[in-house]
Length: 312
Ligand code: G3H
Ligand code: 13P
Ligand code: ZN
Image (cartoon, rainbow, N blue to C red; front, side, top):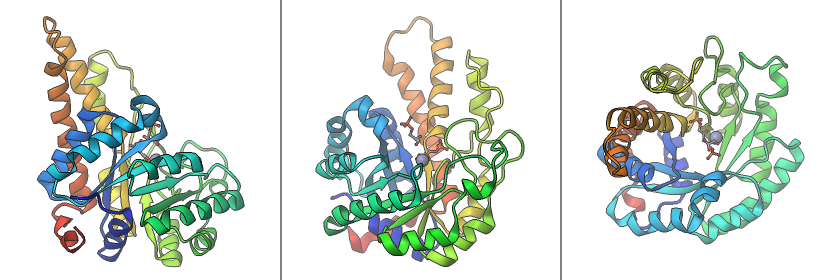
């Protein structure tokens, strides 16, 4: 079965007011855990690779595995480039069968971000490949001393950006950030701003930095030699509220890494006489799969694969 275009995933999720999970992977172990989890949940998904993932594994390996195994998974799933930083990156993804890309010039001035995004849309749209872009900076509301207006998305700008670029999905900065340390105090998101962006643009919206940083994995990692004191993520209730207000894709990388590393650390400490990597990797994959299923459930996409049968 061919991979599906992100255009269809975004369109249907937006129409039916739910979110689809975007899961990052760097290797076979994560990819398999993600696809097995999605299959059990009968959920549409984005499987995505960052530029760092491509530097680490090689795009031929990453896309090669995906294209080799896709028929094993009768699911609507797109292969997506996460945080593409150049037109060269986008072209590389197109040439390796990606069906969705993100161009991220959110750290550049508005007009520069807009111009490169327009160029990427002009390359991708004729091929049926979806384009996601980002506005604002992924900075936590409680750790950032500068004013919110200077780093959160501006809803009027979002409307202009969407109208002038023709993107399929927008990632608005509303107070999340990547990684393990998202908040110092109480997690906060700017829901009013999110609502406004949805009202003005009507487009599919993406929540980056959505990991919940589950305390059980942080504790396990700390118990077996890690040092993640102060780790804090986005509560599941906050994600559900964001979905209710118009988020249609939820990006998760850190929660998968935490589940994997917690299990790996524990088994390495306990299985002292084994040198078979599979003994360690298999339980770590199983734990990643559990988190995949949990995230799919909170996104509202469990059982939603059936909405896509006419596109497959
Ligand atoms: O954008 C953040 C994702 O978690 C990817 O992270 O660049 O370390 O692969 P990475
Ligand atoms: P987390 O670090 O919260 O998992 O966010 C991942 C992400 O946004 C990937 O683009
Ligand atoms: Zn991101």
